[in-house]
Length: 313
Image (tube, rainbow, N blue to C red; front, side):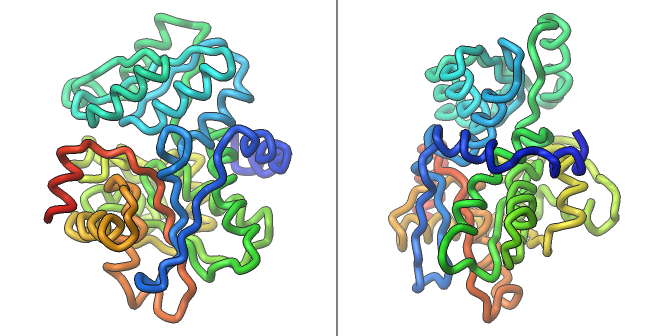
């Protein structure tokens, strides 16, 4: 589906159906940090991904769905398909956090673990699709229903009496940031949408600078496992190229600092990907000077051993 076709969807109806199945997001105004936190850590399955997965499960006719995920979308799709009476298989890298692999299995999906140095996630999903022609392949980000579902998080922010001047959103494949751009434009909200991306996984920044889709040669070795994508999705690239208001490349050190601050100052457990937006705000303060800023904390599913190392410095 193209950007034009996405824009022609009855988004209010899609949004209403998704919102009946998900928890409202948590807004935490933290003046000591200088930001409004938009936290999805208390969401079903611990991240915003349930919004996208619910939209997919509600609108795709196939009885079985195939996807690739480092964990959060896999867990969300497992829950959403179970509630819709469907089945899901999730291709996951062997180095995925054990807590995420266990969550996908616990929620009822089949997990297919792969060595991403030997085969890409997309290639393995393709193999499984050939074995099961009735199954439908779903991208965690490059899919119109995913973008529409993710937009419900932005809708909640833009419905507030005071809309921020700027919202900072993690960027991996681009599904969440695309949802924010689509919702902002559809609702006519006056708010900048700025992406946050690890410097070690800066394919989105390179793509937007070049004006063409750029790819990583292999999955980036960043703390932020939720954004270890090879590239933006094609649909997402078109949306972000037209509507994103900037992108901050973030160091691994800033991500770790943001995880610690969310723990020590907010009592909020965030995974590294979930701390990306705050890390961007902390690392590029001049970019946000004088603005009312919201930072999306996209999820809280993190390996306990890694989390212990991060919060102890």
